[in-house]
Structure formats: C-alpha cells, structure tokens
Image 1: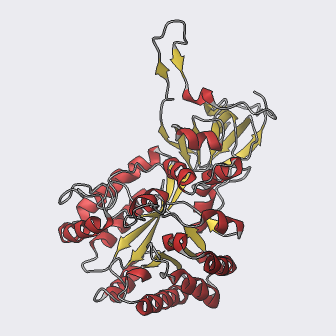
Image 2: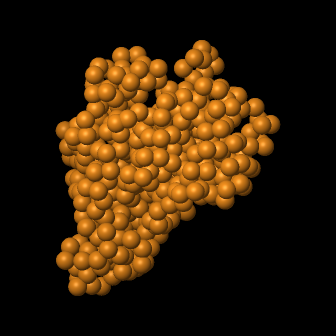
Image 3: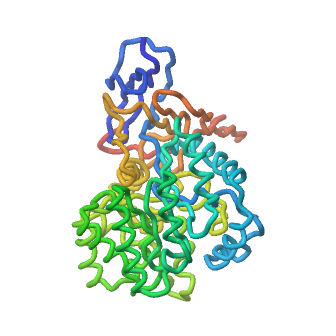
Length: 433
C-alpha cells in the first residue's frame, strides 16, 4: 500500500491532470491514473502541485522584532539601521530563537521549506549566531535553513568583524557573507570582496554578498565579485544579492558587466518587496523603481531567484513569509507581464531559489523528493495572480500543514451561493477546459 496519493493534480510544466504516488520520502509514480490504494488520498482536482517555495535571502535574526525597542515611524532605511543598532544590545538567544521559530511556523504554513538567512556578526557576543544555530537544528526535519555570516557593519568598517566572521564559520555557519558597498571607501569595498571570496574558497564554502544595494551608479562591486568568482573557480557557489545599483548603470557598462556575471556562473538574488520600497527614496520625479535588470540577466543565462529579505523587522514592517507575494511584486516592479515571464516569476521562487542555495532539484518527478505544495490555483500564473492558498504542504512524504480552501459565501439575489476565487482562471483557447 502506498503512503499518499495526490489525485488529479496539475503540474507547473503543464502536465495534468495526473495522480502522484508517494512512498516514504520519494515520489513513486506519476501517471494520468494510478490504480492503487494509499493510507491517505489528497484530492487536488484542478489544483496545482508544485515544489516547495524557497527564500534565498532573509534576515531571521531580526524577523518579527517590529516595535522593539520602538517603531520605525518613517519607514526608511536610515531609521531601520538606527533601530537595529538600538536593538542589538538588547538581544538574547532565547528571544531570537522564539521569534525565529514563530517565523518558521508561518513559513511552513506558506509552503516555504528552504531559507537562507543572513546573521549579523559585526559585533560580539554572537547572539544571533548562537540562537540561529539552535533554530537550524530544531527545524531541520522540515526546513532547510542555511546561515550566512554577515558582517552587517562592514568587514573593515566594523572593528573585529573579520575575527567574528571567522569565529561564526568555526561555530558551524554555512555561508560567507559581506556588504562591500557599506565599507568606508570603494577601495575597501573591493578589498573586502577579494578577502571574502578567498575565505570561501579556502574553506570550500558558498559566498553570498549584499552587493551594490544602492542607487549609486558608481557602486560596482558586483564586477569585482564576478572577477573573483571566475578567478577562484567558485561558480554557482556565489550569490550577488540585491545589486540594485545595476538599475542606475549606463547601458554600455551594463552590456559589458552582465556577460561577465554570466561567465562567472554566479547567482543573482533581487528582493522585490524591499528593493521597490527602499531604493529611489532620494529621487523626486521621475523616480527609479530600484529593482535590478532581471530580464537582461535572464537573457544572459544567469540564475535569478527572488528573495523575501525582511518580515516585520526594523527595515520593513510588512511581509508574511509568502514567496508568491514576492513573485507578485516582482512581476509588477520589473515589470514583466508576458505569459512566459509571469510563469518564470513562479519558477524564481521555487526551482531557481533551490539552485542558488545548492539544494537538490525539487522538480515534481518520479523518483524525486516527496516535498511539495498543493495550491488553490490551476497553474503557476494563476498562483502568482491570487497569491494562492496553500491547501497542503508536504516534506519528505509527511503532511506538515493544511489550510481550508478560500471560499466566499454570497447572499446576492439570483447569483451563486458560494464563490471560489480560483474559478476565475482564464480558459486558454489552445487548451479548453
């Protein structure tokens, strides 16, 4: 007897309806009809079953701290930085653990089962590192949590930041981080990129830098990062996060830079929710959108994956661990509203994020991992449009979360009694219902 059969699901690649058989932690079979019994059946008729969502850029040491020690009244980056400076001395491992675990609960309910979190290591004691190493251990059965040693105040700008970074790596942090544009000079920023890349290469670790998170068209550290990635042969182990300055580069420079990024094999992680709110703040009109050159990077073959960045912390008072909300904002902010691009936005928060984290391919396939999400939507574009309800979330063949379908009860004369928002999906002329 099989463990689970998911009946009559649609798959992101357009296959469907199909049955999905699960045995243990693997997908045993995918077929139009599976004539077998299982201990549990999940009816997914007309619903999309997709890989779990992945967030390749987050700050879990600060999440859910909104209001501590006070609110970010202005909603600006500068006040957020000041607030984090006030909050850091007050952090305790117990409080960070509790907030992080609460966030992980929310993430599971949203089908978000892989997260890369940057952890501030600028100053000792390393409270965030200590706390999130414990969280990583506790959530390991259901969330793949990677930690980045992040010298948030600058590797060279903050006293003993490099010493703290090395110590955090020795404690078991997974990834080398940095923030070159926050160093005191452009030269120090470039020097930090080289140093951090060499640390990652020497230790056989991944590298993920906050890179050129600025409106300054002269902030060009991603060029140095591409060079060091190629020089050291780091390839897909490297991620350039944010790279918002690229939206302000002149077109000639961008046409030179993007092929170098592609040649290096690095990943790029924009963060639409945060980039669209924090960048362009000093502009009057016309005002820059603040998001990097996603279509051009894609066209060059770069793996681009959208990240969440923040949820209810000193820098961003919104957020909900919803990677479909992230994809939805990306579609609007880039903008990219072709059918192909909207479908890609869904992939950016599933397979592309997993690739950036160096995780196994999560595609729904025979023999693949039995980790998936059942969505109240018929296809990826509809899922992005509605930020679809997660009806069931599975990891390693176990159901972790269930949510009732979103249905409205209507009291309108002559109209239906109930309304399913997923029923508004367009009917394709080449694939009629």
